[in-house]
Amino acid sequence: MTRKEVFEKLDEVFQEVFDDEDITVNDNTTSNDIEDWDSLEHINLVVAIEKKLGIKFNMAEVNSMVNVGEMVDIILNRI
Image (cartoon, rainbow, N blue to C red):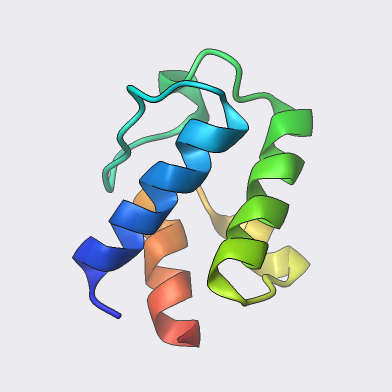
């Protein structure tokens, strides 16, 4: 899977979790960029990404993610 394909899948997940079809994410996207992205929605987002991509993040990975780019890096290392 390419980086572009991961971003396409993440766009779908973010749009679904936050119920907003206009969301598109990039390397620098953080929780500050999406209005409803709080700690509870972060958990829902992580679970939805894991299901969509068939992977499991460990707690250290989840805690280390400061933006979507870092999330994509972790995903690409896993698949």
